[in-house]
Image 1 (cartoon, rainbow, N blue to C red):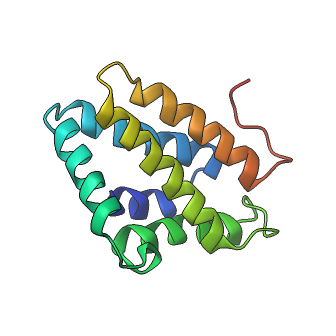
Image 2: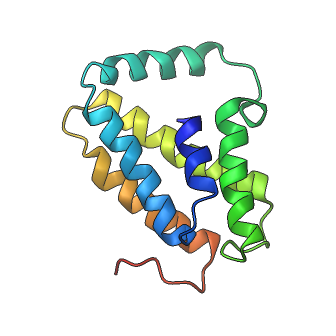
Length: 133
C-alpha cells in the first residue's frame, strides 16, 4: 500500500482525482485477492493487541505524509491542519474500512472507500468540490 501511496503522491492530476483513484486501487487489489480478507483481519487484530511502534515512522505513514505534503505544496490541501494529522486521518479512514471489510463479507469496500475519500477531500480543502454530489 505504501507503494500505491507513493505513486499517487506525485501524479500530475489534482488530489480530488488522485485520492479516490488511490482508494479504488486499494479496493481492486484486495478484490483480486479474496483470501486477503482473513489475512488483513488477523494483521489488524495483531496490530491492535500488540502494536507499539509509531505508525508515522513506518513506510505507510511516511507515504501518507508524502501524499498529503504534495497536495499542500500544490495548494490543493489546506494548511490549517498539520499534514501529519491529515495523514493520520487518511490512514485512519483506510484502517477502519479494512477492519470493517475483514470482519464482514457484505461490507462494500469500494463504496465505503469512495465515500471516505469524498469526506477526506472535504476536510483537506473545504472550499473545493469533491467531484461527486
